[in-house]
Length: 247
Ligand SMILES: NC(=O)c1ccc[n+]([C@@H]2O[C@H](COP(=O)([O-])OP(=O)(O)OC[C@H]3O[C@@H](n4cnc5c(N)ncnc54)[C@H](OP(=O)(O)O)[C@@H]3O)[C@@H](O)[C@H]2O)c1
Image (cartoon, rainbow, N blue to C red; front, side, top):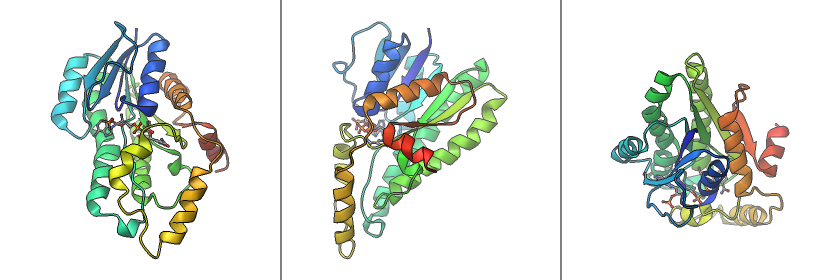
């Protein structure tokens, strides 16, 4: 039986991905900053462990407690929206700390065991903002673009060691906790003179009809984790798939 460790399982894509891998018969280590057992099925194949990807001690403790794993899913992430000019550098650093350096730190911590066993996979969850640029998310996009470049390079580096590295690029999902969790980083979305433009952009955003479901992402992560064809990118959700096809 294979074991997957997933970051950011308290809600949204991570939670659904944990449920999906479990339903496929995998052993699942669902990690959360603040562990909650009640959101996942009770099972001998499912463990909830505390993990904050920005804290080296937390990463070490989670990997010590989890034992050997076959797959790491770097799903944890935070959003930020607003005109770049008005975005404090503190927020840019916070976003990179979780979305980019958190992915690198987790990957580096897991690689020795995968390299030694010459098997395993790391799946990094980015976003459809890497497929088609969107306004008002420059910092968030940069944090995810960095992961795209990081992953593409790493995939070559690990090929001979039989360790696979993959990207899942989800589209926009209004039902995860993403917008709510980004709240503290949306203090002043767009001060003058950006306000009228921002109003138009945000209105169009909320009217988007084709969106991604949590299950689209869970399925794509599962496909990516099991893929041996050499495919690097897995757009997830109909909006993301359409963007990838029109590139
Ligand atoms: N929803 C979308 O439209 C969308 C689109 C494209 C890509 N994505 C990406 O998909 C991933 C999942 O997002 P989601 O939409 O499912 O949002 P979500 O419901 O807010 O889930 C994000 C998860 O990341 C966790 N997290 C945040 N900071 C963390 C940290 N320092 N250490 C560990 N966990 C941390 C959150 O935990 P807490 O509960 O502790 O905050 C939460 O469990 C993210 O990488 C996001 O960038 C989302």
